[in-house]
Image 1 (tube, rainbow, N blue to C red):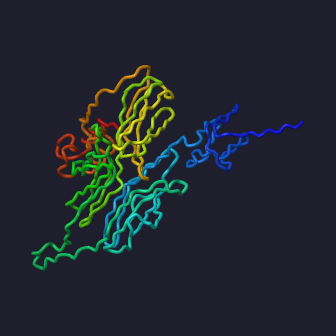
Image 2: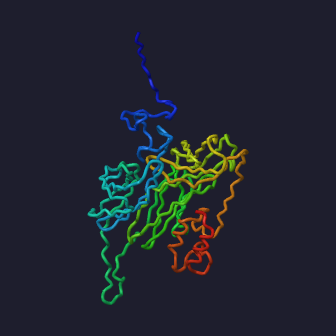
Image 3: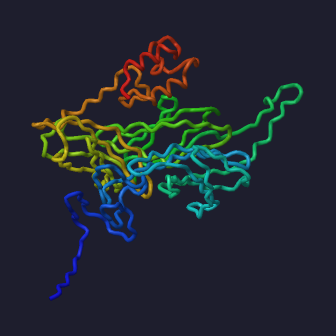
Length: 422
């Protein structure tokens, strides 16, 4: 007698004495193979290559949450050209940035013509028509050449330089230089709904605005002298918790309004407990852009990720089960995604897993250490960069001249290093 069996395998748990693959996503192809076993079509860490080791754990399916922040783009118009600069795209957990491409169009929203420019943070688009608005986006490419992020659109209109005003041989009429009426910068991006957005220029508050109910903001800073500036942007949520500062350099051109678009302020994040009993939930909450997708990262011996969604007020809340966490110190941070834009990560907030739970005390904002130049309650490379701008320059701001001797020198940097938080 002959028996015939049909074995149906479901995408749940496969196990043997040698390995276990949890909930794979099946896809034709035979991607993972060895002399001992064959596992067909698991989508797992494809962006960083095949996983090999003497012994290994295979985290199959969509366990990881690949991350790449979108660049913030600056567009400065010139004569038949537009100079573009952008911030570095921050990629991790399965993605690595290998380069950028510039998309260009004469129509808002595209379609764009793309040019690969390599792993650089600036590109000048030449042979443009003066008086014609041009629209640009920056795409981010990974190590495999795939596009993994696209900036928001910025625009600029190339303009011929104004005719010089002649002073004549007597020198009595204007110095012979070009005369312009507009020199400034426009900032736009996302913060928190109805939150106050502050712009710092060289560590000094320059302008504030209020984000709209949709979390978007746009603010103009005019009457600037040409030159290099270091700008920082931050916001405060409805609980007066301040975001980390987003800092970037900009060169202001005489007679040109520079546009900086795609600013996406990182979420705020807070916890309901400073210490949590192992196995209990810890509430992770904060504020970000309206209806954005929030990714929560918990740092442990193994990183854990969770996702939730912000509500119509930008508020998010996630109760994280601490059962898989080991005893000891941990931290959590969050990022947001909205309409193909992704924010940087928030500051990391520490907590402890122990045998008892301790609720967080009412928040006290302490930012009084010398060296905290941009007043974000941290002393790190951002503060160092701002101070470096004022190194040996005349009349530095009081917040940067740490020893109040009228100059920024090695003594001020020594004070900053003593209070360094990273």
